Image 1: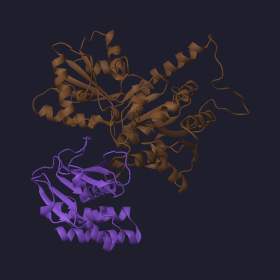
Image 2 (image 1 turned 45 degrees about the horizontal axis):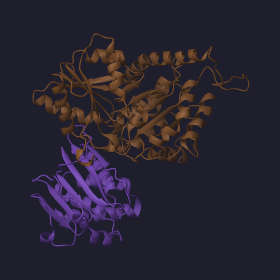
Image 3 (image 1 turned 60 degrees about the horizontal axis):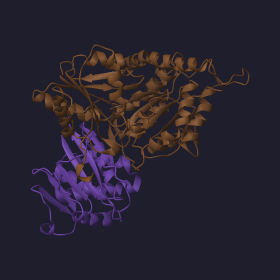
Amino acid sequence: MTANMKVVEGSYAVAHAVMCCKPDVISAYPITPQTHIVEHLSQMVANGELDSEFLTVDSEFSALSVLVGVSACGGRCYSSTTSQGLALMYEVLYNASGMRLPLVMNVANRAMGAPLNIWNDQQDSVGARDVGWLQIYVEDVQEAVDATLQAYKIAEDESIRTPAMVCMDGFILTHVYEPVELLDKERASAFLPEFRPAKILDPARPMTFGAFADPSTYTEFRYQQFEAQQKALGKIESVAREFQETFNRYYGGLIDSYRADDAEVVIVTMGSVIGTIKDAIDAMRAEGKKVGLVKVRCYRPFPAQALRQALKDASVIAVIEKDVSIGAEAGLVTDLKSSFYNSKLRIPIIGFAAGLGGRDITVKDIRKIVERAEAARKGIESEFEFLDLRWEIL
Amino acid sequence: MKEIRLHGRGGQGSVTAAEIIAVAAFEDKRFSQAFPAFGVERRGAPVMAFARIADHPIRIRSQVYEPDYVIVQDVTLLDVVDVASGLKDDGKIIINTDRPLETLKLNTEADVITIDATKIAMEILGRPIVNTTMLGAFCGASKEVGLESLNLAISERFKGELGRKNLLAIKTAYERVS
């Protein structure tokens, strides 16, 4: 506990972090459970605490389209959204990354309809893993605050120039009150340099962004984006370390681990369920079970090498994720398996879809997953499971 | 770690009450967490909110199934919700009601504390909004948050005359159950 900590709502803490990043333009369309973030920002602008243009628009499509224009003109931008709102942005997500515009957006993760569901899972942003944005998933409100500041620094770096999503579990982190150290404006400003992109839309030096690339050049555009994401692997880690030097907080750069060094069963996951898993691990460790956790903080770019290194001594890996790739498995488990295939690692990996549409994940659930994973050491029965299916209503 | 579950109806300020518990506990230099049960809140519908207080950073984020304390803002919820579900035997349940204790049907070994918070709120606030009054009762019955810290948290949330009235409602309820 530090002297500067306060108990505030997660959405307020994130809005405060955005204020410290001094965006030129904020564009927003309200959607639960993201709304509180932009409400707080709107209040900050109205109070004169934040000198930003606050635009209310007619849809999420417009919210992001406006920011594409602003960013191309050299303005720092912010928006946040969730679920259907992110889906409505889909076309613009590709445009922003293809034009190499370093927008930063918080995604308050929520399930996708139908059926209509306002609660948390990560289907929305995991489903957008291929749109060319960086994706960072946070485990608590403090990390959401800190990752938002870090995201601007990573995204705006001239060698990266790639938009970033900071993904925080809707309701669970947006609506929780917990102790947080809000960012200090001056230290945040010192950490995050002003946005001065080398190329902008300027009538004095006419230039076009994203207009047209025929088959002779399109592949090279994609390659450059791919290359920038590979460079971001190093940048995300170095920015996390730089942040640690300034603010004395570190959550891992690409990944982090908890009691994983000698662990036989290693859980791999991302987001707010990590706190509950850490409590479950401590309880199981006290009973002599060798269980550990590897947290995937950065999902795009995918930290394949870091994960292979962190997981090489595991006997079995259980991936817990709040999304499903309907017709295949799910995002994280598929990517993890892919990163293992051409290595010498032959560790059983099983995937669990859990917490879909807001279903609570408890310590008991984590114990059950660990039991299933232990059983899989003797032979995998199923590679992918829906946790706690209610057979009685199926 | 102590876990608290609040039952109310949409519009009765159960979520606000949980948040105030978290702020007050932190004033006491303890760690805390508060969150709603994320229902589709409508006025009058049964709602829940949760709070946790501990001497260490709180990591768990699942809902509260085995509370140490239960706060019930509206006695009519007893007919529709198992408010004592999972309540620890050595825990406490604090219910806003004017009914005699023996008429309440509760499935629990825990201490049952009743207080006519609606009457206190009507007399002091002039409105049947009982969340702060119930916090006074919780504070008095549990001593899990200090009264001064609770007053600080309330003053931060409610300014001016409304703040003063809420502090009086808290004091009244606190003294009645202490």
